[in-house]
Amino acid sequence: GELCIFDLDVAMVPPAGVAADLGHLERKCSVKGYVMPVGKNPIDYLEECLTGCHLVLIPAGVPRKPGMTRDDLFKTNAGIAKGIVEACAKFCPEAVLGMIVNPVNSVVPAMAELYKKKGLDPMKIIGITTLDVVRANKFVGEIAGKNPSYINVPVVGGHAGTTILPLFSQDKVAKTIEAEKIPALDSHVQDAGTDVVNAKGGKGSATLSMAYAGARFGRSVLAGLSGRRRVECAYCKSDITDLPYFAQKVVLGEGGIVKLLPLGELNEHETKRLEEAKTQLKGEIEAGLKYAETESLA
Image 1 (cartoon, helix red, strand yellow):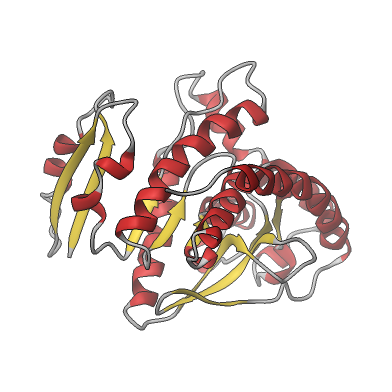
Image 2 (image 1 turned 180 degrees about the horizontal axis):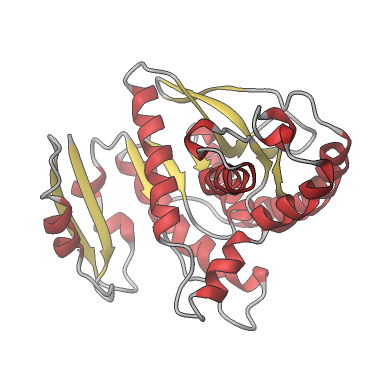
């Protein structure tokens, strides 16, 4: 195996250093770092890094700063994502792209539509929502006094605020929690990212738990590519609801997502929340589609 690390020359730790550090892990894998001067175009720098890649994880973009609207954030981060996605389209068009670029709800539709415009498969562009599942499992485990390793709460919808919809009724442990505790637990999962930002006192956001969730998703993609199918929740182009993009359980197999799984049975609370999530998500998807109308990949 081969792992390539890419970052800008303004990164706090140079990619060659990250590669040297990761290169000591006891895995049959070579690690190499690639760097690009800030302000340059990824397509001019990433040929060696991306050629032959099967999976590209893209944790990119700026974090949301105080006073910044979601719209400002989207315009900045969509531009950053587009540069990398454009390079992937040229050098590893068959690879699965795991997007960790906020706002995921808008960035994924934007990039998937640009892929489609280029004649590539939009299902290769996947929003990683695994952290919502990880948090839901952990919080249920805390309330129920159970090991979260044996809890699997599907989280559907999107990847921000009210669009995050944990389906507690579909897990054997979570469904034993008293109904009156569910709304607060639901909010706890939705607000978990903000809780970390506050706890870090403005000095960062969820990075370690996100790395864990990204690694979990990446392992499932690689297992699927090598013929061992895995099921994870992910945000992608979808026909499961009346919205064109949605997070639901997906089957990962050879080539990436091979099947979308239906939402299954929802209880009354979840049915009501689904409508709320869809209303919010609709506008965020539209922002992404609008972006893709005026842009195209090189």
